[in-house]
Amino acid sequence: MGLFTVEEARAELDRLLPVLDELIAVRADAAEVAVALERGEARTELGGLPELKGMQARLDELMTQVQQTGAELKGFAPLLVDFPADLDGVPVLLCWLEGDRRLGWYHRLDLGFAGRRPLP
Image 1 (cartoon, helix red, strand yellow):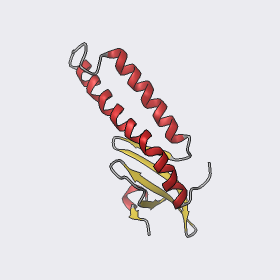
Image 2 (cartoon, rainbow, N blue to C red):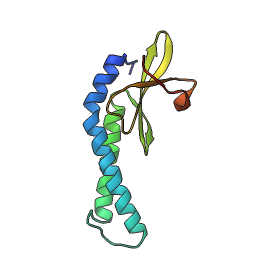
Image 3 (cartoon, one colour):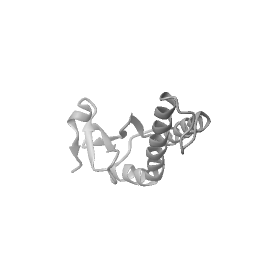
């Protein structure tokens, strides 16, 4: 996949938001069931081991959907999605963090998340 423009990345994020929202919800459910199973509970209101396996499979599917766009899934908890781009000749990653409803940040490739800045 190539580089995104800011507009293309924002449009792709708009298409991905339902996928990301589901990923967050399934991740939370899976975490709850996994902790219950670790405590020795056979089942919770969300299910047991079979349901956990199904949730894990769904998480894999959702993560694959994100990556198939050309975006990079950099973090799982919290979710962090980067869109490779070029700003004024500088290679950057347009950066979406769980909780954001729009794409408003970027960082240079060599700086990583610590160099995150608002998009101009």
